[in-house]
Length: 269
Image (cartoon, rainbow, N blue to C red; front, side):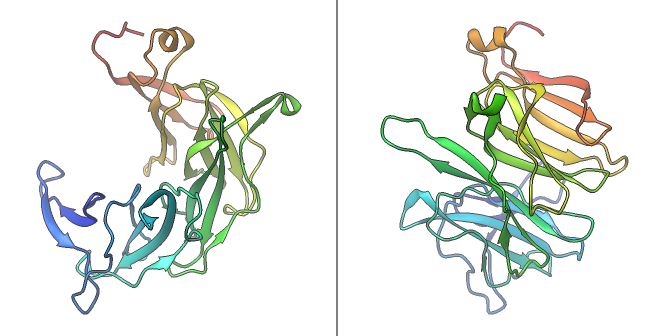
């Protein structure tokens, strides 16, 4: 199952993703649509440990795509009916939550980005995390806000589009894109309530979105992102090489780098 974010309807595949069929609007127990608005920003589906399916979505407030209202619904019957929406992020803020995860202990964690800008300035992204021990809430937000702050503040910059994974040792690891041609990271030891200061790791990146996941069979971490070194970036290949890598030590180091695909005309790396 996936969600058509432009119409906020369900899509079902019965052949492992080869073909898809529109299953129509998401309905409640009375057969009425749960969502009246369309065009969600980054819907995120998750199979919960209970067997239910959770869907996080963000809708524009009064048509303003910079002001989003983020909620969650869940289904106990494989998407046939859905619960009443529960608000996660404060309505009308510049919040932009990304991909929902659930920890071994059952906590739901949703990384989030705020974007702050003023005239004449590109702005800065600051990341937080929402968390709840029940899909129906209450939802809370982390005490710490994250952005690049290195060399005692000599290096400052935005952290954007966060992704979170639970490591084998029980911590949470957040990766964030930056303008520094490297990935920013932070750890949480308490399920997302507090986070360590942001550090730029050794993974080269062309300022594009990153996705972190855990390999179920081994507990290893998988990272997929647009790897780009300085030479590629100067030639305009910011997002031209899709790369994967594995970490066996909860994100401390990365191995087994693999180029999945790269743009035609780009020199082989």
